[in-house]
View 1 (cartoon, rainbow, N blue to C red):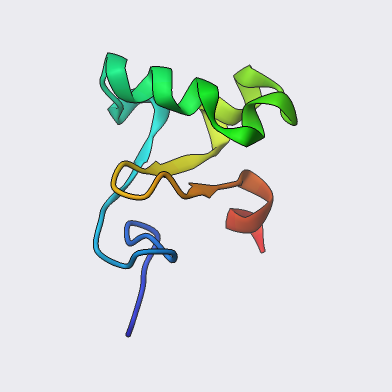
View 2: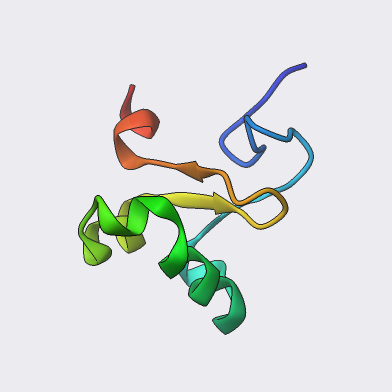
Length: 65
């Protein structure tokens, strides 16, 4: 299966969203994900992307590889 930056590498069916694309409820979920305690909120919001189906988080470091 071919993937791109908008396809979730975990579930393969959803569109990855940036912070600006998330609604208020989705942002609250993101704030409770395990990575929230490991990374700076501002950097996460600017660089990471999330799948709103399975809540996979694509980190900025992965995106640059």
